[in-house]
Image (cartoon, rainbow, N blue to C red; front, side, top):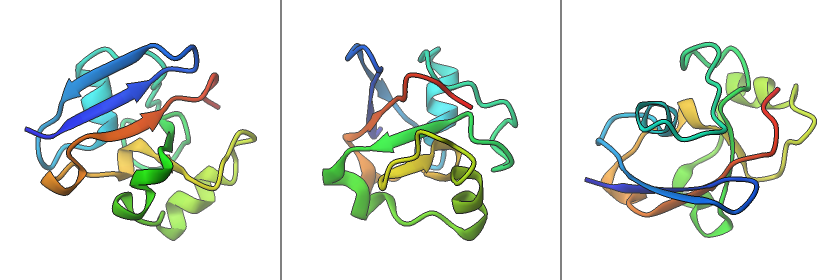
Length: 106
């Protein structure tokens, strides 16, 4: 099983086993990681699962789609390496990925 490291805004870390094929958002929700609201349930129609992918992982996590990019544009805390966690599917290539959680979800 691949691992995801979530780092909360206060630097609290959660290292969680993920299931291949699940999104990072589902991994967070299923493991009660605080800081991911996921209001739309993973439909890429809100930005409440915003994460900031660690710089060392951004190439492997990929670029946001046009729809994801549009949703991220609504977020005032967007960073160059921001992604919606519902749009990042866990694979063996992402084993150990580190994502930072913003202080607020919008």
